[in-house]
Image (cartoon, rainbow, N blue to C red; front, side):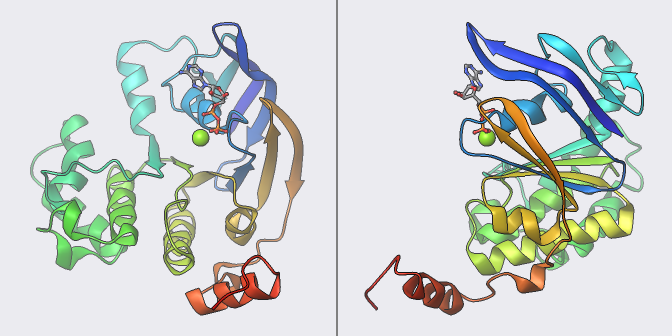
Length: 249
Ligand SMILES: Nc1ncnc2c1ncn2[C@@H]1O[C@H](COP(=O)(O)OP(=O)(O)O)[C@@H](O)[C@H]1O
Ligand SMILES: [Mg+2]
């Protein structure tokens, strides 16, 4: 369980997060939706120990994160993985070497690392691409490498900041399916930040609506499922045409 109690964060005199309270249950897929500038990324960074709140506190399983020290910070960080819109892969490292990075950082025993990496790559369906470089991969493949890297350390929580924003509808569905499997097979708690309602509705059980640094609403929803999303560019274009957003073939 992740709990935020009256959390505020300022940048200079600008209040980016204003007294936000929120709770995320263990094992759920929780969506955070809001327009650009609403404070979504800042909120994730406070859960991820990258930013400290100015007021209030963040708790994970009852432990307050604000005052953690040394070794415990590292342990908690390792239990939290993060996925970004821009993949953040290292260009001069192979797929395998990108995925092994968290194990290097955590100083896990060298023996067994390769097996862990390959298991992760198999889970996202990319074991055949282990020796490729990121520039040789499609957007969806890059994001799946990022997922493999995120889960290689068996985190408890996966924080995803706009994970599908640079992907087409087909690839978006593929990436959301991987996220759903990570949740179902490993019980990982997932937080997805997005400004796209269709993405949030497809796999989230609870949704927090943010605007101007505040939480406006928390809604329980019945996920529509990934299969209900646009699976082809044709369907997507047809819908745009019928809604009058584009008029020309
Ligand atoms: N490091 C920072 N310094 C100054 N302002 C920031 C910083 N990070 C975020 N902000 C501001 O805080 C607000 C919320 O940003 P952010 O959390 O990135 O929003 P979102 O992810 O919802 O688009 C924005 O107005 C942004 O410009
Ligand atoms: Mg953001």
